[in-house]
Amino acid sequence: MKASDLRIGNLVYNVLKEVITVDSIRDAGVNGYSIETIKPIPLTEEWLLKFGFDKYRTDKAINYKKGLLRFTFANKGVFKGKNFLMIANIINYKNINHVHQLQNLYFALTGEELKLKEND
Image 1 (spheres, rainbow, N blue to C red):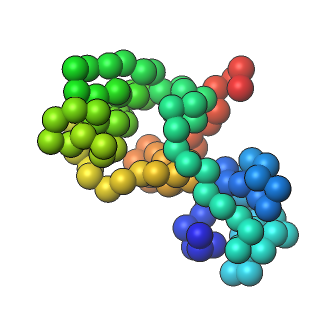
Image 2 (cartoon, rainbow, N blue to C red):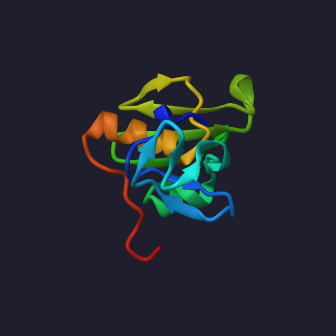
């Protein structure tokens, strides 16, 4: 992971594998931790639900929707095993595999931070 991949407010793992919110970024580290010890959080169903995405299934995929964004895990067909993000029904095949990547993309598209649901 590179410091340049992060923004203030991103969620990452620290050296103890605790979830921390980035509040300080330097070339050498994040929040006082060495950049080598900061790890990305894998994007899972649990995280998508925590961010307020609604889950629904189709015959070929498991989908998570929030506003105009739809995150899809394909489990059948030509895209089996792939994940992709759709924005207003336009497909972006760039893999979004980590929480901070989704946070950054959401901010770039909406100008708003992707927030955890109130009860989480």
